[in-house]
Length: 466
Image (cartoon, rainbow, N blue to C red):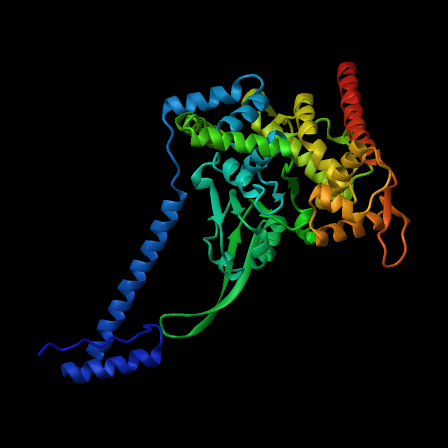
């Protein structure tokens, strides 16, 4: 008759469980308890050694980077040295499969590139459900080397503290859905600001004794996430660049045309792959380097921008990110006093940064959130097209196909900021509304653009005088 084996859980770090097992082994095998205890101690030591070896192997595997061939290094460096780097990069990101979103895709790519610096930038993508906010993040992050990024779909706040001490250093952390990642937002805020997070936990040693251990995870890190929320907790939003996904009909047409070509087999997948690999390799050959901006003291963000201190820091840091990306086109300089080697920001870097930052600064100057602004601009276009001066909520819902609850929320916001006012209507009857300032957004955009252009003009004049 075959005997069935009985199996039980055993914690070799639990003194009580181990003592019981020693007595049972001694009794069954008719040996002394000291012999059984010695065997279990040896087993525990071997298992501990095996565990540590596996952890070390895991770290080595994670840190293992692709070794580029001489030809790959040369191709990547030549790409970074060639003229019109920003224009070519924007175009090649598109060829790698990112449809439309020309400014957003290059802005996001440069923010991801900043992970290699001591003060990386961060980004949050806003967009309605099903509009493609994760598509932009996924496609652009696909151009970053695998060893330099960590994708998070589900992770508890505590689990964040159990990464290796330097496992996240200079990594790109991608969060697909910020709406369901509340638990990790606090440690993420901490590691963004302080560049490290710590947590004290209680553990047991091999003798079953308890002791406290401080877990430390070091940054810096670059964090990117997506959300459908119209606005975020201010502390999270303030630390990041806010990108608003293009929800226009023109963008819809671009995406659907790409989908049709893909279905028809007219998209060259091998070309997309080759471009993606080249861009990954350019990321691999970028090296840490100090950057100095000789024009920094003359750079002032517009007064209209909210949270000017943090916005100013983001603006200067983004200019440095542009300079960092151009490092193969800059001569290294040496500080005579300190001996520090650095490269300098050029006027061209500032001009390129201004082009990409313009929309970001406009959004940061707008009291309306993105959903409210989108609704107001759609409303303006419809009124202009219909040659109407006023409107009712009902006719707008029918023409623009707006959800009633969303429309109610937008109208509350627009009236709160005096962009819309009621012109007629009694309780229980339809109300007529009108827009108070039809040109306010154009004026805001022209104002921000004018200030940036003025700064560039003054800097160019100053450079000629030197």
